[in-house]
Image (tube, rainbow, N blue to C red; front, side):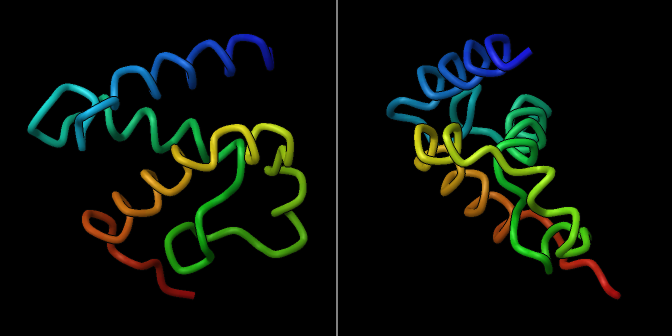
Length: 88
């Protein structure tokens, strides 16, 4: 449910306060889980996540995207550092 996603994202934001990664100084599965959850708020740019432009609106919640813009930036920064671009 949307309420469960909001609770998760609030906890993610709290966990990241003062930290680059969810569990402190190392990149872990917790970061992958957080970044993946944010795909349902607003998908990452096309080169980071292969999705057609027609499907992008179905995966976007503008209200949550506005509320969690900081987490979306965090996710995008992770993708820039750790994820290889997909090929078409």
